Image (cartoon, rainbow, N blue to C red; front, side, top):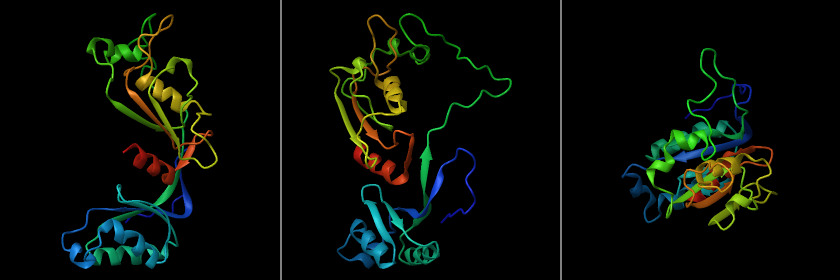
Length: 230
């Protein structure tokens, strides 16, 4: 178990007071004897509530729960789970923030070894996307970020599914980071009258909004997005 009470560094993720992420590993085979007919997925919510935690969200498929409680309870929970052959890890729930691009390190060239041309961005040239012959057709790509601008003209007619995990905000990208990332992964190629920029232009897109229009989001929303994507 790792619990850190040290203050966050500048621009780092910040802990959410009184909230924790509990990650359960697969139980030892002998743990099944203790559960009887109940599965680990069924046992976890009951166990957490019995230990005095407020169960906020539980993702059985991921083996992860988000709970509210006091730090003093964590050691007791750890000891009881160890005695029942149920390995777990407890970490504070964090709130994450999109960072601005860092300045290049001294002595390291700032520019890429490729350059945009009239047809392709430098990135597509670097990964040799055009030479590969693959377009992403039949592949589903999930991007968990700030959502997606579904009205973007470059994505008209594409197979796009969106979902928001930010309370009070729909899946529209009010920040721009998510649309940018989806464009890099799945944007158009070729693009008449402009340079192409997408690696997989025929992939199906699943855009999960786990970061707000201000560019921040917690473990709860991110885990919900991962569970949705799966």
